[in-house]
Amino acid sequence: MAFTEFCCRAGGNNLNAGTLNGSSVEPSTSPVATFIGGSWNGTNIYTAPIGADLTEVIVGRAASLTPDSATIPTVNNYSVFRITAVNAGTREITIASPFAAMTWGTIQGVSAGDRTLRIGGAWSGPSGSLPFPFIGATVHVNLLNNANVRLNLKNDSTYNVTAQLIGSDLNVSGYGTSYGDRSRAIIDGGITGASYTLFTTNFGDGVAIVSDIWFRNNGATGSATGVIISSFQVYGAGSNLVVSAMKGTGLLSAGTLHECEVFSCGAGISATLSINCIAHDNLGVGFASGRCFHCIADSNSGHGFRHTANRSAAVYVSCDSYGNTGSGFRADGGNGGLQIIQNCNSVLNTRYGIELNGPNDGAPMVIITNCGTFNNSLGSIAEVGGAFSVYLNTGNVAYASNPYVDAANGNFQLSLASAKNSGRGSFVQTSPSYSGSIGYPDIGAVAATGGGGRPFHPLSTPQVIG
Image (tube, rainbow, N blue to C red; front, side, top):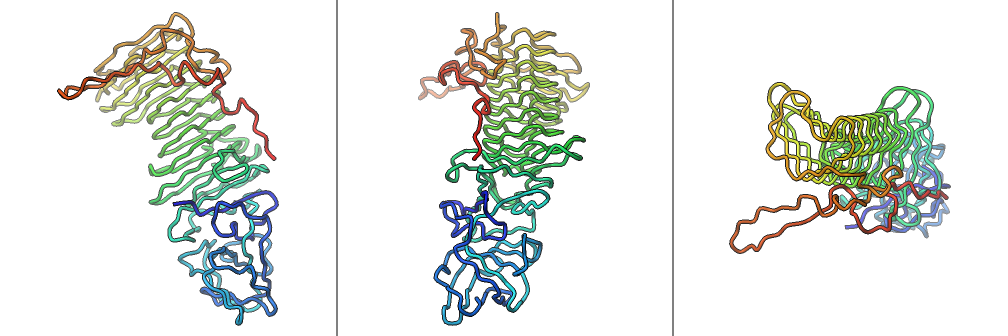
């Protein structure tokens, strides 16, 4: 099922409907029709003024309703509906009832001769202290029978804001030419005043994805987290996001992060699950807790990967920790917690490659297999406090030299032979009908071959806006 698409782009107007009909066709910046001075029955019928041309009033199109005097959307005075019927003789336009509408606040009351209806037209999007259309839990979007709604932000301008944006019941995505083309839009929270959470979500019981956006800056002072995606539920996901220059943790999620980058923040990423993500040049830890697959922690002022939660599991598979001022991997979780570190590299970190620091009671369990280390200042793998129950610690490789092509410039492809095909790829197969399978993965996040030596950082190629 396709998304019901809404659009923000330069030149649009937040009083518009945000879409023509919910399709993947980018709407014009102007409505296809505007009626001023009509009447509203308070439920589902708009009566256009005498002499109105209803040619563009077509069933299935989206229409916004505002007072004639409106200059921006305001609470209780802005709604988007879907046209369900039109009567040219009576000039009555029937629009979907309130439960199938987008409303900021309550549905507008009965009015005569002072309501404007706009059909179609893109929004301009959030700006300054006006967060529209990120208007939080007061939004209910259900235009097409529970279809997933996606808000698309075109990258033809920077969305400069000074107030928190709240995504609710919306998938949010940047784009360049066509929806879903993976081009990032930029949302900038400014570099003055007290820091604040630039973007946060509350997905309720439905999955939603925030993708293809560069979030940058959230003030000048304090330590507020920059971006929060599903802070208390696992449904949300972030994909192809860049988060930079946040005063506190850059990106926090109880859900899943996929192909995201966080840099120059107070700390990097704290997520339940991270896949192909990179946290670099942050003032604190690169990755906090969670489960990481094919992730990179590079040049952070703290540990590369750190797990602190009690009675929980941390899983790191095929990850790289390079040049951090703490240890490459630091395991602190206690009271029966579990740490699995497999096929990971720790290189040139200021403390240990892997540092185990357990509590005095409830000793956690640890599995370390086929990990590579090189030139970590205090040593490769060490238990420095408390107690750990080591179930498996085997197959690890002490490199003779730096294993990467050019890690200092973001290229973590492997150049060292002892890192290639040296990861753990074992399976338990005892069934008589199985002949046996075993893999030979490289150690680390980035394969030794392929890609032509292209740097890993997504921002190594400048993004052109406009």
